[in-house]
Image (cartoon, rainbow, N blue to C red; front, top):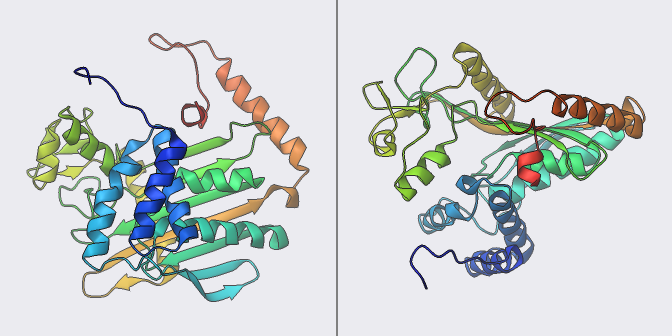
Length: 313
């Protein structure tokens, strides 16, 4: 192969390969297919930090006994519009997809429904589940919160010590066409995985996204992995949003008393039809997106995009 040549594989072939790989690790076929599809979808959406790049980490986790590949999520507490779900340390992708589906089905009966997950492994790209709800003609909300002394990768606003995860928030809204509104972002300046990608590719981290172990700004990904931390985006406002994901996560009741850590996923589905006709709502949302896109472009921009368009493209 010529130097710097790119080898491409079809998404279907890659999904089939990853499914076989997970099945070989004693994962039931339906769970293996679900996790594989979600990982490949992340790559297709332009987010390789949450795609198949993660597989070696998952395999190491399985080998170390940190994941039960055959486990299926279970409802531990339930009301008409809510559910607490134990993911049982199984595949987080499947548990999250199963839980959003549960929230959607409940929302059909109650107008809106919330589901919390505990004992949950990594669930991949959060926008996947917002898209799942939008495809079901619901508004979907998904958050992941992780916080406590030494937790994860980010320092609180004004601090230098790691105490927060990337703590993403995703919202999906149906628009009546094949491009839903999808807002999906970490409450850190970048996601942890994007720093890993930069290190893997031998490139610099984006400016103003990480600090070294002394709290000084840096663009060297190696400094982050040597005791550094991610920066929270938007100063005190991003810091507050990061903590919002933690207080929602705490609905699952999972709290490490000794380590004082919160860890969990929260999902919500809103049935638009409970408030107004779906077609009317979608027409108005699409009109709003059109108004945003019709804006005069600023210097350096070729067009204005609506949230969800980059991933769809």
